[in-house]
Image (cartoon, rainbow, N blue to C red; front, side, top):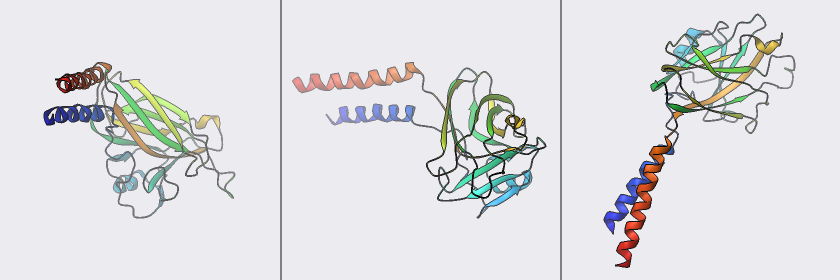
Length: 227
């Protein structure tokens, strides 16, 4: 009986590991940084010095790194990125723990919110966030997803974005930027972003095999109980 319990526990553990979010991003929630406090309008090299496993490469050089334990979607930190009126945009890449493989299915998730604070009604807001895959930390690479962030920043106001896709080519970085075209808004655009993750989607055959193993163990246990 103890052997059966051990086998069942092993199968359940394998299933839980297969369905869990095994985030490939080393610092997707941006918590691993040395800023200590909120810092604004960071030059790319300043951002790169503060935030681990991330590389800023946008033309705007003005990423905002916020320490806000109340409003951050996950943990204590979040980013503010924008496209200015002259078309310069913020962009950064996030390091992966292992490469994206062509032909493999993945689940991308991140959170975004817009800027609309009292006294800042004319400030640029509601950016279009673009996500890419790249093999170069300072190049956006291939666009895989984009969406406009049109909610207002509150603890409950974050929008969750989910995208399931099959990679068409390999990549070693996930890239993020605000749309250089500003969505056609001449006043520029702005967005808060936080908690990025990307993980491989378990193949149906793998889940079927693990599930069948558990069912087989249940059947085996019932037969032994009847004896």
